[in-house]
Length: 93
Figure (cartoon, rainbow, N blue to C red):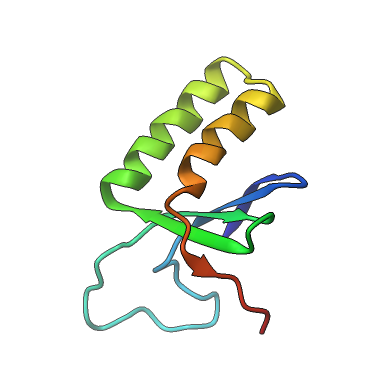
């Protein structure tokens, strides 16, 4: 898991769901890699997990941002668009 962005309104994490633990033996059964991105809307207390084609589209956005550094406002506007998909409440463990 890697934090990519953190502001007063949003947090974006890149998740490597099947990344091996340092002390764990390699799996004996092949696993489907389910890498993705978690976007947390701090204002609503909800999150959305992007995987599959959604994650690929978001990765393309990140690649474009790496080439042309966006403003914080551009990032926030983009994440605002994904916040409409957020319906999972954040629970503290």
